[in-house]
Image (cartoon, rainbow, N blue to C red; front, side, top):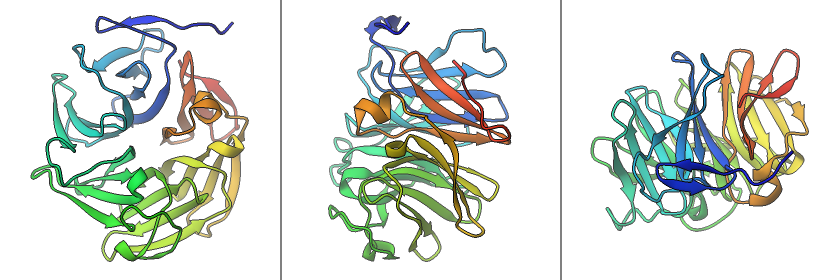
Length: 294
């Protein structure tokens, strides 16, 4: 039975969770979940599913609204807060954090609803500045922020090079090992690819209904298509688009309307954010079966 889901976290009372972002540490068998409504990032230990999810950030009563997550492979977790227009880097060993980018810290940064974030193989951080309709790069050492692709503050769906291309609410983002970024372009219903070496932006798939999350596994890109309540697979060798799972509607796609939906792939398993008491669900890519993880 579904009802009001209440818990106490870091001295606060939170209503039913609203999971949005997700990051998987496959080697450590851990999943980090951004719970936007409760204002925390939680850890699910895949080796101990009988235990309760643990709050890893913030450890005090700070008011945050985490929306998207990315692990940097160096003991850090980047957390985008699309309400307070900040990006934090959390040291997972200590739970302490720094502001990596924010309007207040550097006025020229001017964030406007960061809904996706990823870390490339070289350690540079890329994020979707969604309502500015651009993809931006954050240099961890200097905290410098630059536009990689898209036309500032102008929505569109044109391919092109760097700032001559346009996006319309970019909301999902993932990097591969070959120097590409893949982008969910929510309002245009497209999946785009950016080649980082030359800034080329190209459309790989279109006709989707509100794509809001991405995961990459081998030569397949998995897309959370919120409007159709489906998870789709895009074969990157022939750009063939197929349906992987149906009926995956949840709180995000049904009522929240302006949030990402985190995905992560690990071999034959795809993890994605759930809704309400189901923080995370998992999909078997072999059988197509979907079940709650937590």
